Length: 344
Image 1: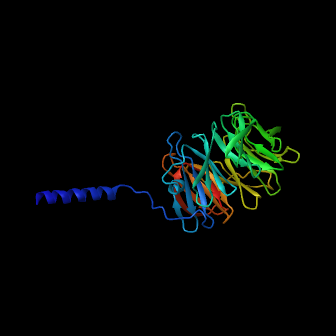
Image 2: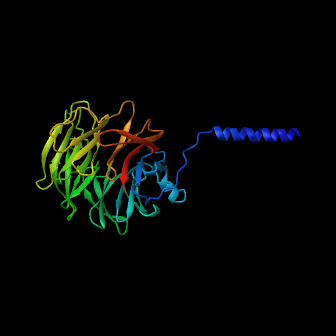
Image 3: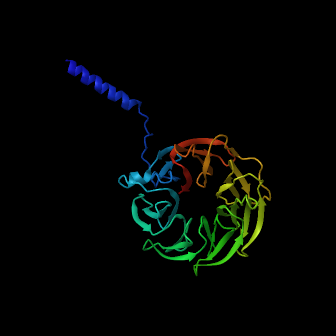
């Protein structure tokens, strides 16, 4: 009898311990093909191998915190998920510290291929149906990818540190935080044909409704280079506007709305900038307060702003959703260090 009582007591103790242990939120079943689904890129911690991709349904507020793992028999994506690009009915997942790009089917998010041979890839820019460029933070070149064979087939010599890119008129405009220049590549010949002095620390690039290119440049404090929002005319390959920020500011994460007439960026809060203006706003539409805003995106499907609070770079990020004027709607928890969003 004592043995039975002891056994029951142990079971009750174990049950209470399990009950008291913090549990992750239940991942409600969501399909990648759900209307207006959103992919959230979670970098994870450098060297920890805890990067992930979350799938979020704005209508139900349901989220799968690690969608790739769910769809690929428990496999993880690797170390530091930098960016995702959708093209040719595939998603291309750029893994920075794992030196690879994972190719997954857009219909079910199952891996179909791995592109390897990179140094430290950052962003992928589709050029033609069969060709793409991949920037690299440490490689002295941009890699040319054959999207049929999923392999590196060439490179374009360029100063190490290439980041975000934009394609227009058979030209790829390439930012480089380590350089003072935005590089212009002829995508037919795969060669650099021009460059524009924009100052160091370019941190984002967008194309507006007038086919003009906008770049955020943080400048360089030691050399007193100003922080600027720059507008480039791609036809003349010249700077049309150069709007300076006040000293001490750190703007980044540039994105644009559905009608492509208003830019948004982070700067210890979320700011907007109608492209018709010639001066910057002095106050944010969304105040950061004590939060740590890290990722930013604009959902064209319902005209909402997504901003991620990385909290402490260890906890799961909180994704906050707002109207274009900065009115809070709702929030949801995603993965660790959410940096960007893919809106289908």
